[in-house]
Length: 119
Image (cartoon, rainbow, N blue to C red):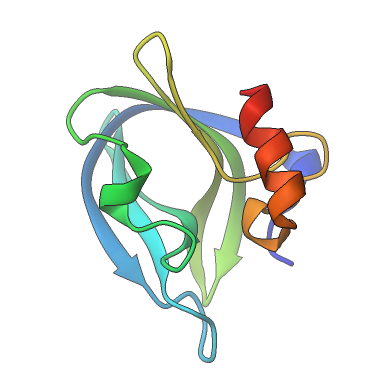
């Protein structure tokens, strides 16, 4: 597992554009985006496309955004793995548990429903 919840970090900036990634050979395609923080452009991995594609996330490009997650080295590239994306006062798209980094796409439908109700 690349995600280390103990090394939490957050980014503030703007999403420039979405892209589909293949994190590693044999892995399912992922939903990702290019994030601009200051002068830096950062590749952010969000979730498998099968869990949610760019459109289904409801996340918008070009507005002030805060992302929580952690850094990972994937295939020699520094990548930020998102747990939560927050835009505006009320919009939150969460894909991992804060307490242990468990991805929502590995949860049972019951666990997922409970987690979504809590947000």
